Length: 177
Image 1: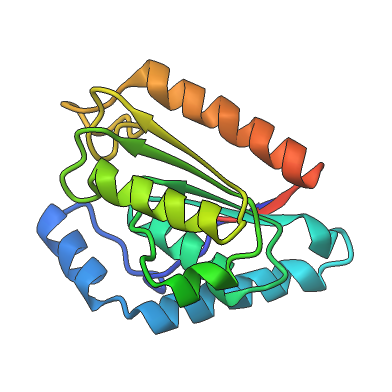
Image 2 (image 1 turned 90 degrees about the horizontal axis):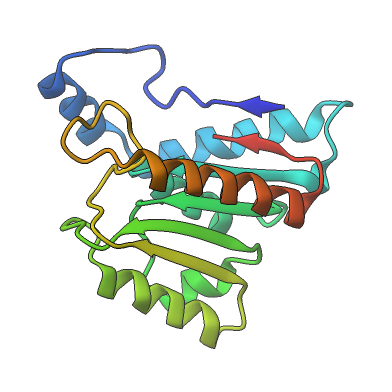
């Protein structure tokens, strides 16, 4: 089962400028609260095993999926696709789930050195982390609407590894996306 969380409370747009306004107006505390509520919704369902709820997201949603791992101790696994990562060691200490991450070596918003620094912090803290940095890829390389930067082979590989990761970490997984 998969649940996609509507962080913009029904507001949608195809206009890039309006989309940026919606994104800037989203408060992280409320977004985390919405994700925790989604987790609780899944956890309360009789057809969902609470030990098998994972999260995944892309870009801003990838960063929020890591925030859910920080704020929801019952989460079982986390996949972040080119999303911002925490640098605060106190936050990293709160991550108690395996984390899989996909990033682009050419991503200017989330540089590879910051991704590697997160990976080092996770390893030092004894956390399970698997980070892949895709050579020749920028931000949103898994997004087919990214006409200049979409890398179909890398996207397919990331998706395959995501499914494999959830199968290995959770068995049958429900996910908060």
